[in-house]
Length: 85
Image (cartoon, rainbow, N blue to C red):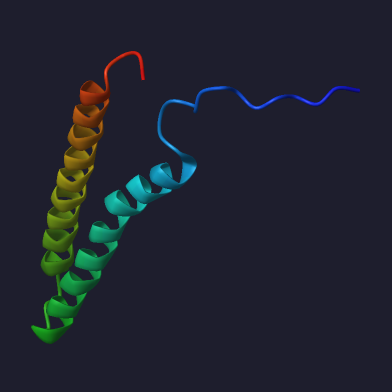
């Protein structure tokens, strides 16, 4: 039985931990800002959850902004390395 040899060059693309980080960057701002909006609603004794809705929208915008920044940074690093590397 022969063992598989490791490849000579590293795998391309994003690592699994990098993908987990991207997921947290998208979800964490939404959860945190929704929670903050809920706190504002309770503090102001709002019957409707407008603070939570505003927090969710702000969290989505913040998460997408962080995601786009990371994608642009990754693509610019890949462009600097060139197609051979």
